[in-house]
Image 1 (cartoon, rainbow, N blue to C red):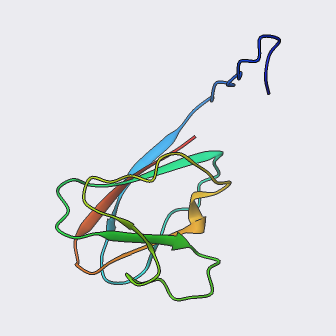
Image 2: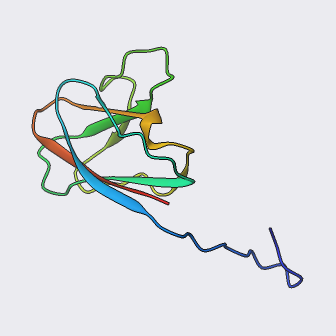
Length: 102
């Protein structure tokens, strides 16, 4: 929505939820949290990349077809109605991500 001057108005969010999740060599699904926007960040202390995909993707998530997050990378803000749409995997055990949902 734009106002009379053409600037974009941003409605404030009432609350947000965030958390940390371990990711390894098996697919991990993010929790069922309703959202408007989400952001996922691979911890900078990770030793390997993490790969993300939409759970509705017909291909099995792997390093070959997921969106790569190297240690320290993040997705930026993504419009998504529920965090549980996201699946994660890594080629190495004991990696971690942080997420935030608005």
